[in-house]
Length: 347
Ligand SMILES: Cc1ncc(COP(=O)(O)O)c(C=O)c1O
Image 1: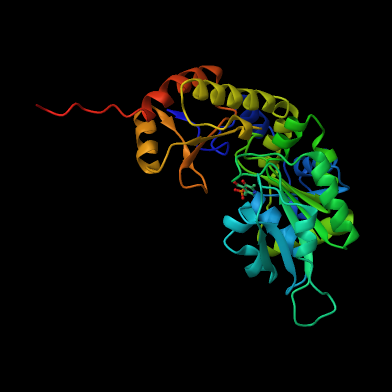
Image 2 (image 1 turned 30 degrees about the vertical axis):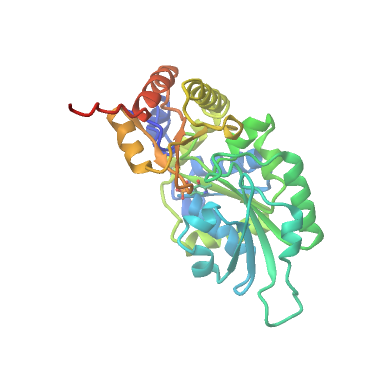
């Protein structure tokens, strides 16, 4: 099977497994795990902030960020198909008492004007004051789309002007940085807090970071306990993340090149893919209305894909375990699977 369902499906490489096996560990709740401490030091630098906190998941990192940047009764602005909106179970309301306002995005992005239009009167005791803006880069449900740097800078400048906090859900920040040809710190450092996930393109079994100022990260460490994410000998996992920072960052360009080659091969074979949308490691394939049937037929041809928020579109995601040969095979198998061979009617 060629498994394009998600970049979360990777197996740890032999090198990563060796790093995990040999990790020096201690009690991370007491800040005595040398591997976690080293990951937090390097992670802060990588993300352009003073301090970082190691967490089990990116969902937890996002939820902690929302909690430490707001007060109950505040309003959060986020793109309406963002992970925080669709896939974190209403966490902003449940954990932080936030009113979440979903902005209509284009390619997963929204404009400074859209933010300004939603700013509410903070002097009133009747309305939820707009306090925080969160963006997602790359944007998952838009198809791994990238926020251009100048748009990020303009949005953040507007938020600063209006005294709004800014969070970056950078679960796939490294994909965005590689696509823009800049350090992740250039993007992450613009925000008050940033989430990074290690179990996506970076190929780790689990783990995430939240980064920000020392003051905010003090609060984030309280949040880590509050959410039940304070671990013990977590260096076992952090070792995989350190290995990924050393070995799996630059290679992400290969995932992007493979996604592009897959997309171009599919277009050449007459499959409905919009090449303009392929900016990182996602290929969005429009299979028409009978999506479940298409997924089944792809499976019969040894190709696994997953659904998206769009009713007719499935996605193929490249990652550490997808090779050049897989791409060649998929370029042949996908058009074959999607072309319905009509059985001639019996005479
Ligand atoms: C953009 C984005 N943010 C956050 C997450 C949550 O990651 P995790 O599964 O580590 O909680 C995901 C997972 O797919 C994601 O795509």
